[in-house]
Image 1 (cartoon, helix red, strand yellow):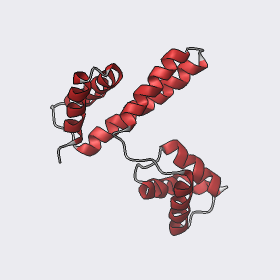
Image 2 (image 1 turned 120 degrees about the vertical axis):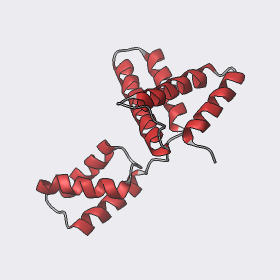
Image 3 (image 1 turned 135 degrees about the vertical axis):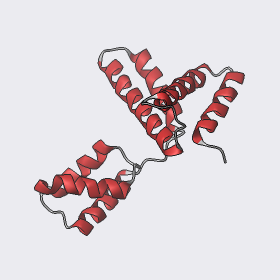
Image 4 (image 1 turned 90 degrees about the vertical axis):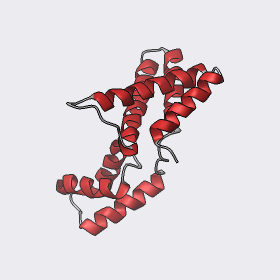
Length: 150
């Protein structure tokens, strides 16, 4: 199997041939972000799949935030466009944990570390993040850890 970047390029070609404007523009934007990350720093390099995933997660988060901002400012067309772009990007991201799965993993991580007080939030978050391994957003994890420690 090829790399995630190869898959993005192949899907971009397919979208261009199918004249899918939304997918084409979204994948071009995502690949541009990946290329920018590759040339950032002192020397250009090829990104690993994990690094490409990190870039895609950032891009997805940008789309969610922009969608919320547009919706809050009474611009529903732009909000819908940002949501649609986010959905295209999320096809390449791993499935996010459900609330029940997140609660169970956080409970197990806090139990293993013996975390019971809110003063232990930092180490508890570190343990929870290690257990979750990027399958849920940090905000959701922090909210669940905070809820369980109080």
